[in-house]
Structures are given as structure tokens and as C-alpha cells.
Length: 148
Image (cartoon, rainbow, N blue to C red; front, side, top):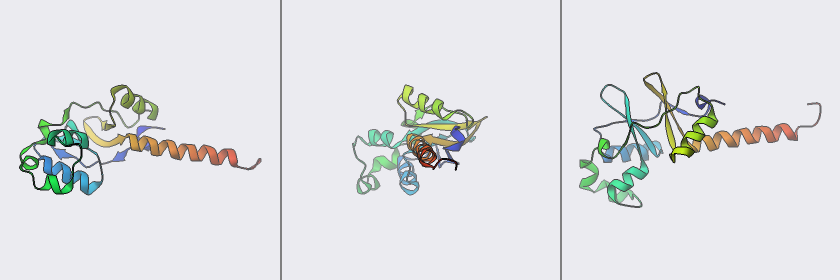
């Protein structure tokens, strides 16, 4: 199984000059915890997570009511809190290589790059879903009656 088999293609991203509020709104709207950060030329320059956002707000939990009313959410720029130059993976990389990269580097997502273009994102949730689907397939295969 390759990364391309389990990644989220065409992920939602944000410009490096976007505000914290914009990042939070995108994460909320698209039900995601990570946003690739792009520059004006459309190149990947970083990644921002919900954890980065909580840290920037100095809050263990972001409550919708709290961040919508804060000046901080509007004034902070994504580039100031993103992880620059994130570890990336190619779509044809093996799934276990992506999992190893995440485990070794204590990260929960990898932008998927083909050449210079962002083509996807793979998260620990994507890997878990792929594992569950593979496990179900193996289990069904072993439960089949002989000769089928």
C-alpha cells in the first residue's frame, strides 16, 4: 500500500500571511487538525496544527466562543506559529515508511509532495483507517469457507 492509497488528496491549505482566526475557521469548517502553509508562489513552506494554535493562544482548549472574540486571533499570522520546512513524503512512498517517519519524528501528519506540488496530506487518522480496512480484508479472507 502506498501513501497515495490513503492520503487526503487536495488538502485545504492556508497562506503564510493568513491569520490565526482564518486557520481556526478553516480547521473548523473542514473538520481537520492540520493545514499545509503555502507562500505566494504556491510552494509549501510549513504546516500548522491545532496544537500550534492552542499554544499560540496559550490555551489548552480552544473554545469557539473564546477565539472568535479575541484580538489575538486576528493579529497573529500563521507564519509566526507554523512549523517551517515540514517533513514531507511522496505519493508513491510505502505506507509503512510514512508511519515510520511520523513515529520517528513525533509528528501526526505529512504533507504529500509530487515534484514541487502539494498533492495531499496523510495523517495518523488516515493510517489508522487504512490499517482497519486492511485488517477487515484479511479477517474476511480467513473467514471464507474453503474453496471460495
